Image (cartoon, rainbow, N blue to C red):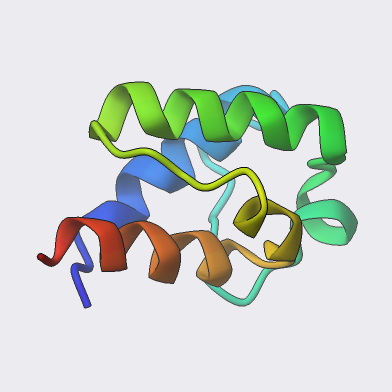
Length: 81
């Protein structure tokens, strides 16, 4: 897996979730419960990931994102080709 995507995704999650820069973002954290990323904020996360990482996320797949690791793995799979 392309581990270089995690820091970029973590930065996007901090920004969209309006979390302090010092907030540690780990793959096991739940988007909603741990980071406060609800469905509307998730759309913002997806748009930012697409723009900043140059990938396209399938609209159907994003509904399955429950943790930070889910996003990491999905995006890494798109960038590993």
